[in-house]
Image (cartoon, rainbow, N blue to C red; front, side):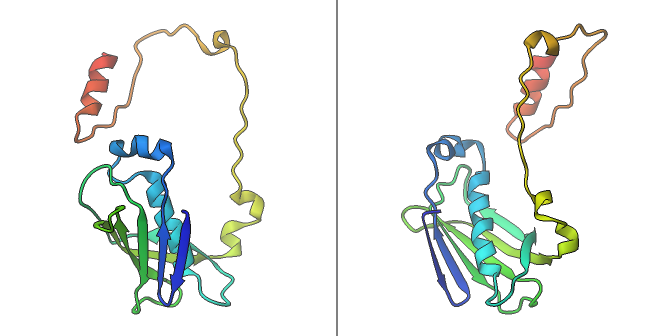
Length: 166
């Protein structure tokens, strides 16, 4: 996100996708990084003055997208006036660079998380620890046939992978 604007009941965020996101966006209906930008914007929209609680997105009523590989450049979230105080709910509209609506996330709802759920802050931090291994340590002789789980999709990628593994 490059710029965020907050007004009464509304948050707007401009998105400048990285070169990697632009390169990958045709592989997704909505790139995960763009959805993350929507959720980050939602965190701002869900915040209430003086409320120190942390809100966690827990549900979406509906996601509508006009095509695969959207070039989303702005997200606008509007708070619903009928939402419960402890369950902030927003609707998000996704816009391309020309300002055309290209998608919507409707009924994005959050709930507060308690200190009992989060424990200490250390439980919220993820650390990746790389351990170097020699290839010879990883390759072993296999006895018997290999088994694979292949998830199918609408584009035919799953069956192609299954055929290649046979």
